[in-house]
Length: 207
Image (cartoon, rainbow, N blue to C red; front, side, top):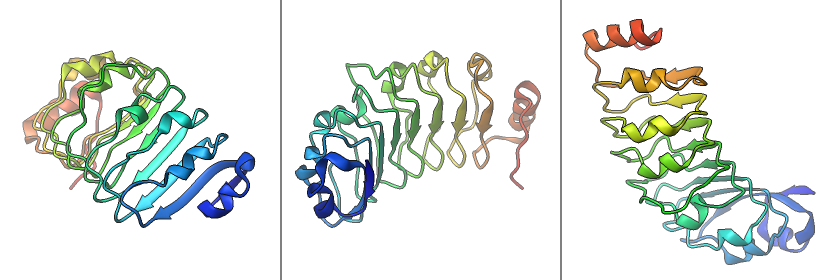
């Protein structure tokens, strides 16, 4: 099994492709990628890509998916509910919202949505009971919903540089596995910061 950085070469040696890392010029991913039956990790970067209109369900062994596309505004359901996906990164895109999904994803452990345009925490997170790492930094979030209380396996949560004015202290205390919390660069008053520091043993590193 090998890493490929050229789709044409990967398609010439389909059985040996475990990782594909390519830059696209098209507005959608090439459907030929779906032929890579042993693909476990897919890394895509594109300045033109606008939609992930792609049969992700055909990549049955896919565990890791990274996408960086400044014109991408949403993620498809067949990606978010992929049964074997463990790591999903859609950082530095233009995602404004993610619809509530009817199905559950039991295996997603890492979700990176930092540097997007989200103004609400996606509601489908309530289904991600195995989630351990969540990065929502550099968005436009103003609140954390109670739905997050179900993320009992959460270990790291990054919320830097949003529009948060308060934090549900008891909600965060409920996450017994949480060992890394990042809250710098929000809209907390000095009084709120003091409460957070005292209740959560948190230190604000910002000046």
